Image (cartoon, rainbow, N blue to C red):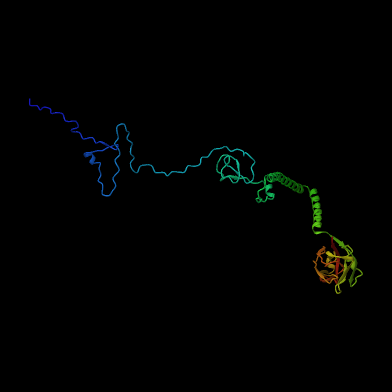
Length: 349
């Protein structure tokens, strides 16, 4: 009774917003909701990036971390070298001086290596093998220069000889060094052996000096005269071979001593004792002796004021039959006499 009749049903899709078609995998929002998602774009600016796709059913939404709260960006780091842990043990061969000992495994490496040949670790802080103290006493071998290439046979022979030398010479040097050390210990510990060794050393030195420099033989004067003559201490007392006798001559005289030989000789050395040996201050001693040879050549001998024999080299300029010795000046004393105890002349063997 007067009630309104229901109208016909609305067509499909009427009263509901249209569903946008998907574009490139995204759904495009339209209508009033789309206006809130659109930001004004100024002229000349780039278009904003498309909004993220809406989550479909069955997709899990990832939480978005607010700006400024994310983790710090870390630059990629170089990966360190992996180190193998190798237990330290004895080296596989005998260590040689100058080699590098690995601090991790104890293996010996040649000095040119940078990494260990057994464990591969770096050798920057490796310990260097030092030579024994007795090896450092031995002379170092010289570096050999490179030679021209040889044929196979010569190369084989040369290699064998070098190998033989390398095996023999070190053993000889070690043996000599050991004997030298033992000899030094025995020499220092046993006085009797030390005395015998000193005596033999003097004999060997004299023999070597004789071979290298030659030896001297004494020559005797067959006649000795002086001016003036002193009958108590004649000129022959200066060449009689005894140092407890002496030739004496007045200070105010010529003070000349002449020695004559049996045959011509070439004088090379002389030993002179000036003054009286038992009482040096009892007479004046020669300070300078002047020698004159028959050729006219002269030679001065400066004397020290002492009783010990004094040696001088002579150069007679060839063989001579005689020599004159003058006392030029003297060491003063409370005496009017100047004396010479002994004069010994030598020739070269």
